[in-house]
Amino acid sequence: MTGNPSLQKAEALWFSPDVVILRADTRVFRVFAAILKAQSSVFADMFTFPQPPSADMESIDGFPVVEVHDKPEDVEVFLKAIFDSSFFMPPPAEVQFEHALGILRLAHKYDVPYLRRRALDHLGPIFPTHLTEYDDTAWGNIERRFATIRTATEVGALWLLPMAYYDLCTQTMEQLISDASWKDLEEKAQRACLIGHSAQRQHIHKIFGFLSIVKNSGGTCKDWTKCNALRLDMVFRSRLWDRNGNPLPMWAESTWRAFAGFGICENCVVESKALHAAARQEFWDQLPQMFGLPGWEELEEMKRAALSVQ
Image 1: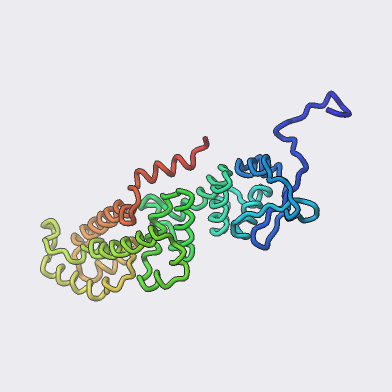
Image 2: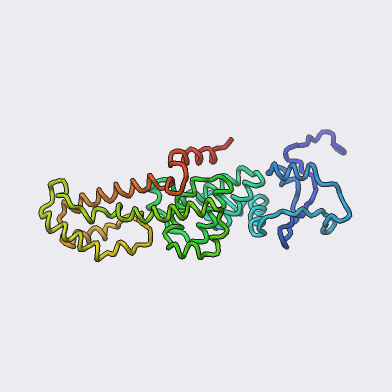
């Protein structure tokens, strides 16, 4: 090394001082090209074999401008995640949903594997692949579900899709197709929504089928005629046909207590709980196929492969 031959250069941590300016729409970012090359194979190729200079090439402060065709807000959080290690920490650190989705999109596009895995780790709990995990999640807003469907399809994270589709299809058909984001879905995704929307509503009656039992609860019912009449009355009181296509939420214990307090015998309550749980599980098992997706087992294998460190 010039000036001191006893010093040894650490090649992996000896970055060139090259600066590049990335432009996304009207927003520009001045960053070190060497750091981007170290993290992204796409940027490495881009900067290793740059376009030959020309008279009309854009520059700012003497540095070349590279235009990227991505949303400026996505590029900003993506670059922050690369250059500021404290910005996009792994779970259980909390991050903004839109940040995770934007970073996932660009980490996939520009091949930054560790950021892709980290973004998927953040999104995974929001879109569970097991029914027990679903019971601990909150519903998302419709715009986030539209965005998730677009991004998960784009990056191949198909295991995020069943719950994204499900949440989206709790809306009425009018709400779905009148939303501004509907037209941004690919035709295949729109078709999946339309088919799944109908199937989802058909399962309302199956999941709440325990309210229309016509048999003697395994022979244990204390007053079969009375309990059946009370169930029928509860169907009308609960107005199940007005539900918004959201059959999965589990009845709380307070609801079951009210059910029992309605006068239905304790044996029928026990059996009704079992029937309700079994119907929910059956619906969950069929959920991916309702939207034209592989089954849960295959989706789980995709998820394991995507999150594994190569």
